[in-house]
Image 1: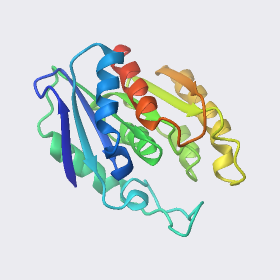
Image 2: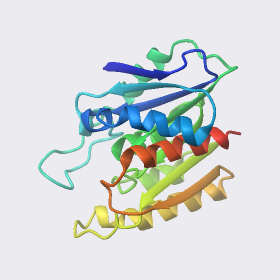
Image 3: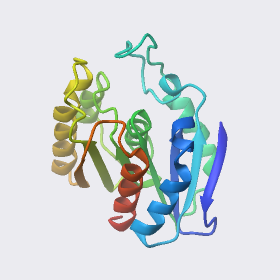
Amino acid sequence: MTKYTFGDPSASNILVQMVDDHDLAVIENETALICELAGTDFFLIAMRVSSWNDDLSPWKAPAVFGNEDFGSGAEETLKAVLSELGPIDRNKNYFIGGYSLAGLFALWSAYQTDIFTGVAAASPSIWFPGFLDYMKEHALQAGSVCLSLGDREEKTRNPVMSTVGNCIREAYEMLDEAGVNCVLEWNKGNHFREPDLRTAKAFAWVMQNAI
């Protein structure tokens, strides 16, 4: 995976985000927004995946739009992330986040390891088949989670993706009942509106509400 870095390498807040070309097109604006909203130094590591549906999916699932099925490459991707981070500095806070399927990957990752203080899941693909059941059966290892969704994302004719609103409400309730410091934020618009701002807001929230 190709790595892009932004911010201060010596900062105590390390942000990790899986990205594709669409994200990279707005990543500098996202970084500026995080700086403005969080008001604290950070170091953002953006890692570009080569196959979005394969590299970020925790298990195989059929396509819900188009013809491209979902793979099961999340485990290998997380291994690459942890290898990139190297020895964990317990004096620093590590946050993982992302948009859409990268947001789901970020949330899934916090069930696999305890190194992440918080998760910034912006418009995550929480409709992913079997994911809510996975959440019910496993314990999140991060202390803070920001979930967000556009208020028009569930207004779609796609039968799977139209469940995203109910899914994210249920996910929030589960995390809240489990004692996770969690927020569910609603943004204006559909899934494709202002991904850089939504991701920046989610990262800023978990940085400000780290426990």
